[in-house]
Length: 412
Image 1 (cartoon, rainbow, N blue to C red):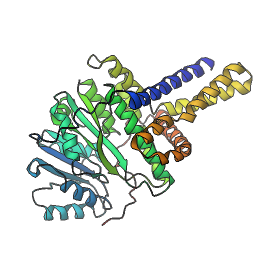
Image 2: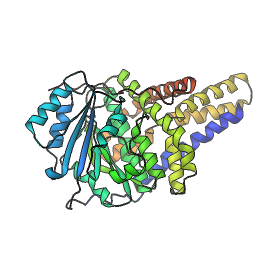
Image 3: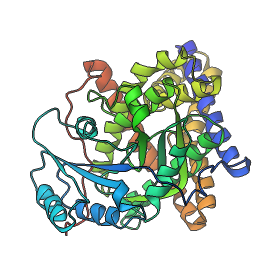
Image 4: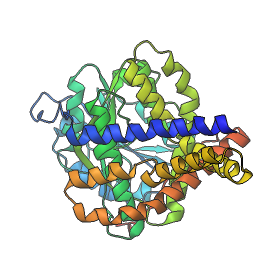
């Protein structure tokens, strides 16, 4: 028990150093925005995929925004993917097709595997463009976003690009404010630091895109995965392609407004990420194309969700050792180590959030930082629940269904 506990403490120390390293780099290190100034070019053809399942509340807003972007219309093809919707999603999409002929080319799926990954796989089979961008149905891109996300692909080593996600319903309640802080830490600090240090920025499944040549080279979208974004990130890394993060390429999303939806979202993310961890940890470790730093960062990124159940096990072991009276000093040290790490947070660490708030120039938001312990505990329990469920039932290849976050916006 003691050796197991100190192994857990060692992991905690590694992740704590990682958070500090990223934050220090973001505040004081050299910042990489290599494609920011590309605004005039011979722009390549781009296809935008919008997976949608029962998205009547948001799909019209998304299509309106995409129709207004600053990109040559003859080189931009919009494909909303309506997958088995039972609400007005199909009706709304078809109305846009009638009003904007030659701009929108819908795919209405009634057969095949359900789920976002399967929908993307089917839609990509008809893509003839060089670049594919993906937006979730509730996202609202700015006018310049398509060019900003396309610019990195002029670099032939780039296989994927990811923009920054910003909540648009921040002022709804405490949860949305806390998620805004978490997103800030994750993107403004975590993702940008990885970009700065030539590590492994993660393609996040939306507000980003892939080069068709790279996607084809690594086998296309997998329809047996719960997290197609993490899956593609690591297959591109193993294949020698780079993923680019564009911190100033912002797109706006609707975050969950109640804790039930938040728990379901976190559990879905954890299940998919854990599946990728099992699949790609060993291949990455022995991959010759990835650098040593990319391997270290990639393995730590794969292990992020595993840290929640590990932390719970550490708490239990430390408390048991302490109250059993065996190695009391070791028990106290372990409890203090675990508690100190918990006070700093796990996913979007508290000090990363603080740095992100400063960088964003919204310093009054720092007053909510203490409340992030609520989000941390909810995530800790939700991720652990999802992980233990996968381990106990061996459901690493769960039956795929549409897992979508509940929408709170009113349909037009």
